[in-house]
Amino acid sequence: MPQRSVPHPAAPDESAGGLPADIRPFMAAFPTGVSVVTTLDSDSVPHGLTCTSLASVALAPATLVVCIRAASPTLAVLLAEGHFALNLLHERARGTSDLFASGAPDRFDRVEWRLPLGAGGPHLTADAHAVADCAVARTVGFGDHTAVFAEVRRVTVRDDRQPLLYGLRRYAPWSAAAAAPQPAAQPAPHRGLPGALRPAAPEGGTRVVR
Image 1 (cartoon, rainbow, N blue to C red):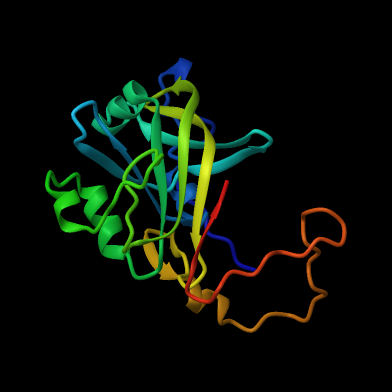
Image 2 (image 1 turned 90 degrees about the horizontal axis):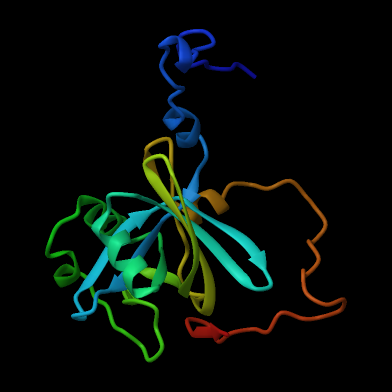
């Protein structure tokens, strides 16, 4: 398979005055889902931003990590309040992804959201297919970003919506990617207890996992 290399000075050495590697082309080649981090400040004013730097850390305790630009106003509120909601966008929510990436001051006036009892931050009810309510457990600053490790207190999932994907600097719907023919394979075992069955949710329903 042909490979494409990104031109770059050979073996840069910062101590010798060279430039550090630009990892953006590398990370652009790693497609991810798209999320919006939301929180409320002490005056109940909502704040939020689009984030694709998200990973699971541990199952027990259930922990995620999101990486946010250190200068972000949303990050400052999130750290001050100690909790937030992580909204995974569905494939028809590209406009919401662009809106929260733009920093528009009226972004919460242009989307549907609510704050359920015990939520970590606003739930984007019309645009998210899954929401995790999180409490900040630890932060690590590195360079121009801060890694926020958060314990997940509650997860809400809608089974009638599919994820929005982002890679190579463009969006793609999960339904299109999943429609591609797949090679024949044995069904993957459920990752729970041996012989356990995954509970079925009503079609088009919402289920909450605590």
